[in-house]
Structures are given as C-alpha cells and as structure tokens.
Image (spheres, rainbow, N blue to C red):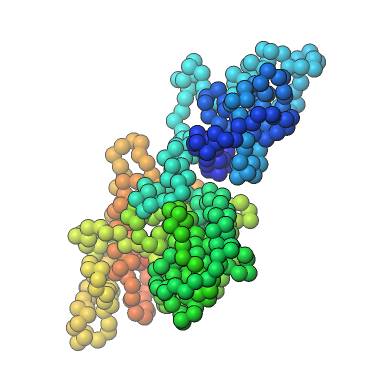
Length: 510
C-alpha cells in the first residue's frame, strides 16, 4: 500500500455496492476472464476476475487486488463500474528467490505451504512465546493509513464537504489533485476521488444544456450559473464574480478552480438538481511565506514557477487552522523527480521567490523576552563602554537602537559601564529518564542536539517575540566581538535566532 488511493478505492467499492444502485448490476451469464466485483467471505465487495466456470451457478474468481481465489455463487457477483475498472490491479505475483521444493519435487508440499502461510499471510505479528522480546515501535505506515482512512473516508467520499467537516480534517495529511494555481495565496485543489464525480457531473451538464437556447437573464454578482466552454465543448457550474460590461461577465468555475471572462451568451441558469452536489474544488493558500521585495503582491515569476511546478500534480495538503477560513491555510507537499518529499513553501524560499513569514500564535506575552529569553549575567573585568540595543517587550512597538547622540532622548539610550558578555543559562534537562524530543541538529562530530517536546511551546513563543523585537535595527555600527558573547543572528532563512560567539577570525565570526 503506497498511498491512500487504494484504500479510497476499496471504500468507494464497498459504499457503492451496498447501495440500491448496484442491485441492477447482476451478472446472469458470466464468461471466462470477465472483470467483476465479488463478495468475499467477510461480506465486503472487492474487484475480481472470472478464472473458472465449474457450473451449477457457481463461478471461480480471483480477487485481483489481493491474489487469492474463491468459488462463489452468481448472487455474490456484480458488473463492475468503469470508474472502479480503471485503476491497475494491486496484487503483484511474486516468488521467493534461490529456493526450490525439498528433494527436487516440482510441487511445494502441503506442510511447506501451510508453514509459509502461517509466517507471512496477511500479518507480521510475533507469536506468544516471543512477546518478551517485543520492542515498542511507532505504528507502521499501513496502520497509520488504515486508521486515518477510517476517520476521513466518509467526509472525503461524500459528494459535498461542508465546512464543519473541514475542521475535523485539521492537521491531517490529505491527498489532493492540484487543479489550478493563480498565486501562492490562491491555489485550487480537488480530492483525489473527485475526477469520477467531475466526469459524471460533466455528462449531466451536457445532457441538460447541450441543446439549450440562450434566454435573457439579469445576471448579478454571486449568482450561480451553467457556463459553456466553447473551445472545449464543455459545460461547467459557475458563480459570477463581477459584471465586466453589459455583455461580459467574470465567472469562477468552482468545480475546477478556474476564473475566466465569458460572453453572457455562454451562460444559462443553473438547474436546482445540479446545485445539490457541493463544490468539487477547494481554494487554498500557502502559509508561512510572503512575497519578496517588500511588496504585498506576488511576482509573476513566483506565480508562473508555482503553476508550472504544481498544476496537475498529485500532492498532500495539511490544513493549518481548525477554524474554517477562506482561502484554506495549508501546507503542500509533493514528490520531486527524485521521489523525495518537498515542502512547496520551502521550495519557493529556496528559489528566492518567497520570504519566510512566521505565524504569530496568540500566546500569553506577559513574560518579557528581555527579562527571560536573553537574560545574560554580567562578568567583571570588562572596561569597554558600549551602547545596547533596547529590546522592547511590546511586540506592537518597534525596537529602538541607541545612537551616538546622547541628546536624542526619545530612543531612551542606555550606556552600560561593564560590557555584557557571558553565557546563557544552561538548558533545563527534563526530570524524566525517558522523554519525547525533536532532533534539531547533528553536529559534524556526531553530537546530537534535541529540543524536548515540553519546551516546544516556550521556544515558539520566544521565537515569535524575537522576530517582533528585531524587525528593524538600522545600520550596524563598528563593533569588536569577543569569544563567548551573546548575540542575535539572522539566519539564511531570514529568521532571527539567539547566538553565541564561538570564534573570531579577522572579520569572520563563527
């Protein structure tokens, strides 16, 4: 099982063949190699193929997604719908290499078959007498996928997805098809199962409007309509964005996420029965990034790059807020040509097409960064007089920098007699012998640095305060750094971090 597609397929088959729509798909005269859907002994319907006709209203079938065979009666098989026929068979025929049956016989013995089945068939669990050796591992991908599908499949497979269902999908990995991209803050996606629904809806639209005649209608913004796409011979559901002129309107084809301007001759009133199905695309926006160049508008290069890279791709989205806001704030992940998982936001930053933007959590700011996060004890013996950056604990106020003119009092410049070098407080090690942590860095010498899970909230809060207080520091003044001094460092990702001078080599500092 490589993805959720297969599990969605199984669930889709089960849902459909339980419904009344499947009752008229009975097979009265099966033929050899006929594709079908057959009920297994667990009472669930699966894709199958006829491999034998023993007679007496019995049929031998092979379950093509699992490889096993069974004899069933005609009442336990149905014709297969085209949408379930398209995906390739999932069961791959294999054999163990470099071995043969004992004593050169052609067939494997019954004992060998039973022992092999006992060891491998549909399970990877250890026997009771091995339990004392069991280690605790994270759940397998199959277990994770299975659990997630059980939770997600009903809203995902439904014909519409109301906003209250979206809240239940918060922070879960959801497979989607990217159908259209306007900019990083306007990306339209469809659930993977939507293609079949879209095709079915398109057929209904053609049947309803192919021979329809244009009639004058007073169109207004937000009205729903049926839109003819002349060059593609398609009809799509749409909603009017605005009236461009008396004869031209801008519409959103909300099932595919496309905005276009059409003549009113291409519009028809949308029939009520075609309004029952929910929108088949969702409007999303990438989080944690902003446009480059100080502008609030995305460059054409960024939009074109993203469109070229993602349009038509299968990807994974993770909804970032559990209250429904539009566009839907998401992270998007997809596979590159090497098969490696790529965070699309980080990809744009790496290409220089976006800057990182930190989401400000609604946290309690009662503890000042200047008092806690950057608390540095003074050391004696330093006689250098230096100016200090004043760290403002109010994130709504700009940080102020002391300047060389002491008469300028609005900056509240403060001169310290001793130079404030020294060390940070040592990290607080959890009391528990076993605790959860995130590996943040592995040094060249093999040292592993971790951040305890219990400290993540405090770290996030501190990082937010640092970004707020170090927005604008003006021009740097000449300064002679010393080993061991604490500092603020701007990383290659444009984020500010706490740092400590390890070594000074000329004008370069480690």
